[in-house]
Image (tube, rainbow over all chains, first blue to last red; front, side, top):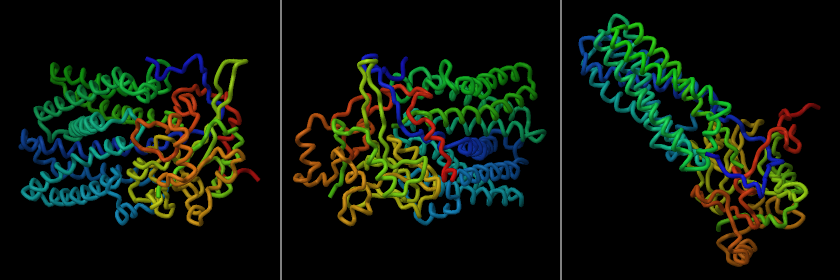
Length: 300
Length: 212
């Protein structure tokens, strides 16, 4: 489907316009989303495992909080690095404009980091009762923290590829996928085989659902808005991001799904770990492509 | 008071006087523009025509840039102008991404967002924006949309059916209007952009500050 019909009768060609702003949100924002998915995802996984495999996961409380703490700090660091005036970051807290997803996200992420620090402290002190009480609130807060980037993308008018319903689903699925993959890798000998298999199911199902949403947008998106059709041209045919898009889809979704089925039939932890590594690396590629292509669209 | 702009594309001849006046008035650095004139060539040789479309901030009633700005650096003035406080801007580029008209850029000298303010500083002194003064054919019409006797209101009344805004479907309610526009000039997706076939292509690669 053509992105937009340029009539032969008009044969209109832009012969002078200033340079497009180019990539405004670069790979720094990709790392932001990727690290946030891991940081919130491991919290979701710990919350689930403490209820389904409590004996297996009881020694992972501190490690999980520490990993989440590190990745949320990476997310915040890259967010800061992406600012053109990073030393004015404090303006967000003292001149807050609450209609902006950036403001809401900054506040929530800051509170989330504070609670994570407390969680890590309880984990270090092996105060399981306090840890588990706090974990409930940390898990609840992790949901909007991982969702806020979807709101930010949805506020970008005319970047019609980014719609809140699909992006919020993709953000949650990315957190589940990244969280389960990270947990499989960091569980080591502490995590039982059954717990890892459960994580494998979460990884496989989140990969499947995310893949379905991407393919739905890929096929049906162009029928809804000319901007979507134009943007998707960058990942179709000879588009500049076609290879990267499909590399990401295979690495993040298709291969991990197949490998998880294989690991269950062969009872192989090594294959499960391979699926987890592929999903984690691929997620960065998938997120990057989806972040960049709407920025290639001429707005003027 | 609700200030607005109207450009009569029948009159515009692409002289870029407005663009230069804006650059000088607002000290807009090299490689960036608050206002620029887009050329679109229409037709097949020998039946060809060049169209000119001045593009600037649309000062939307429902401005996505104002909504997404985390620190209210972008804000409404009482006269309807969407203004920017560069001292408050943190350079997150959210406004650049949110603007459906590509009207906002990051100033390479201050590393903050910047855009057309309808020359708010001149308007505050009861002067017209620099681009209006510079236009040799009075294609730029500026005034109070709430005042039915203003020039812009009268122009809209006379040209009712021919008054357009860019991307009306986005719900931004721009206060920047065009008369004599067409799909090829107002819709960025309705014309080809061929690499290497633009006039003054290298203007886009000038380093900020230049070589003296």
